[in-house]
Image (tube, rainbow, N blue to C red):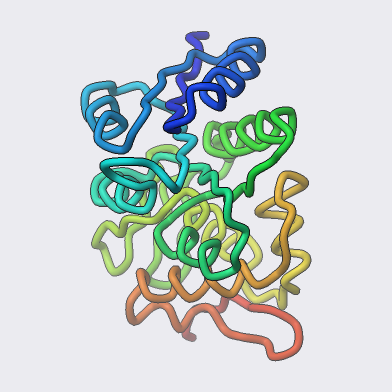
Length: 226
């Protein structure tokens, strides 16, 4: 099997080397960019990038701008790195479609574990490749969501969340259960990120966003209209 390629985007050469060494030792191929513009050049020229590790604060073009540009055409998994641990920054990252958010300093081993978990989830194909609930149809092999017959672009995490909801149709799911099932062991945060992702997912589903019902004091339930 060919090595999966990780694009590391950080203006600090020491950080790029540290991450590159750890990822290479774990069997990944690595590309590096020292700023946002170089990152986009690589992203648009290389067709086999599996995941991007993206620093927020960089010269020429910061991580937020890079993420916005990537999300216009791709659901490539993105792990955002930042030296600032403010909640508003984390929420902004998730709204832009970031899959994971890691504050510096961090353990390279933990970051590699998160990379592995994200790629494992995005590479796995369910035995039930097609799922249909109401007006929503999900092709897990092609990683495409159709709402009323029209394709809808979702981030990797939004896609996984929708699939989890559809696989548990009609079941009241607590935020903790959703975190454990969709984010798994590799997420170190709280349940507020669930609400952020559900809000974004509802918006992208349009009128069918009302399939996701809020269970006050507990979490959510996915139930198409009768």
